[in-house]
Image (cartoon, rainbow, N blue to C red):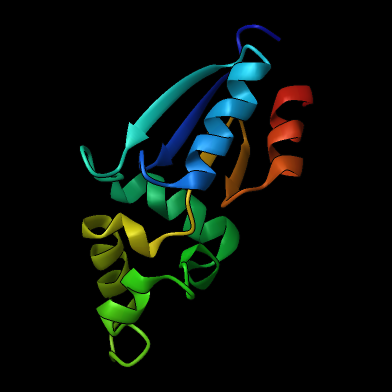
Amino acid sequence: MSDLQVQVFGTRKSRETRAAERFFKERKVKIHFVDLHERPIARGELTRFVQKFGLTALLDLEGKAYERSNLAYLRTTEDGIIAKVIETPELLRLPLVRGGKVLTVGEDVDGWKEMVTG
């Protein structure tokens, strides 16, 4: 149990990212935090989440960044959107969390519990 480590991809400003950090810290789970403003998410890592949830599920469609990006109106490929997401992490529903084989998007307490108990 104690050797569980989760990877949390998010930003310091994201309330949901802080909620994830708090959740795992309270349960004494080791967190590897990746601040997407300091280090963009690797394409391969992002692809894992896209394969599981689909690209649209990862996007924060209500967010200001999405509105400003004009992604809703751009005709672009999935690769084009992924490139944009890598450079603008605010487009994502944060945090993206990976614990073992379990992946979650956004504030997903049930998914986090599954990581801890799984």
